[in-house]
Length: 534
Image (cartoon, rainbow, N blue to C red; front, side, top):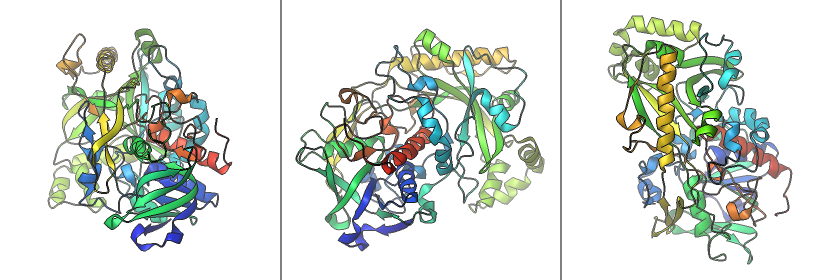
């Protein structure tokens, strides 16, 4: 895929059949799929090949709600490759229940079901650096891995087995996929990427029902125009609603905002540590709920085994979806971390000494990985019990426009993220069920944090997971969302949105695999031709 700089191209290069705004995983997946069909695609990226010195000013938010992690953790990094620069590569599949209308979760329910995304999952997995797109969680994992299921089964009436898959970069086998460094290697001769091209306005016809062009601002503040037949917004869960709201010259409330839905229903995942295990006693628990290496059609991939709340418990107790897993805390002098740094070309001065300090551990790890197909043994300082919980949609949790502006004059996003008591209640219940399940399986009891104990009223120290979603939610009725089931903005015939901002609910799982399945589905929709807006 050709990558150019806005500053070096002429105006004749600012035309395409389809314009994609944002070069993160969603935007590049749509562009790659469309280019494979021979369509002319132009991707606009606000940033450059690397994070620049002005990034803190561009990434700033006006936070007026619950505290969020620093801006570099907010999905939507202004750089080629977008949020893939900072993601951890962890992927999973949304549950069937996540798509359903749940009476105890207001505004739940997608206008599509899980089955509609499954045909796109394998293509999405190839884009994400995964071995499999479906069939790798719950009881499906064991035959996929060619392993017998554990003799002591999990009590699926309360918790169920859940597996996450870790992305693998095709160049650096010790890293997850970083789209930015791979863009030039994508075979897509009819697609181009322009960096340093900040979109500042979507220009529509007089009715606001058709986007004619977009304005891009480059170095020095020069404003230029990009024309296309179809536009796809893939700027992340914060910047996508921001751009729609800021495009208000013709439509005073912003594009797609007839019913004041743009920017509402901001959801994220709240996540953090709820317990610990001593490394001295954690061996059996890590062996049961640890890492597995599975050979697939695209090489070997690592899977993480954890637990999630059963649908029965969610229904019976009016809880949200929630998962828990064990996470090793490796020591600074861990030999296997030193090996990875050396093999990936990022060696530190004392790595040779660290590797030689415990050859027995290295030999045991080689056997575990190559013969047993499980995770490497590490020198640990601790083992933590982590959780991640979904959020119920809340119309007052939202993104608006701030009075402050960024370096090119765009209003900063004002983020009013709301968190709820039900999330904490869900985490406490899930943690109690995990403790009981460990006891039933004969595993060591974790030391639970006081705030995570049943009956505690102390706020749980959970942070956002940098998965902003829901701000342009999918809905059958335009009064309750921003895009339709085909990810087209309600009332606009040629504007589509790719990314987690279209999620009506987010389940407990990392969004990337679902985002890419939706992106592949969107590309197929666009290849099939425009549909009449409803």
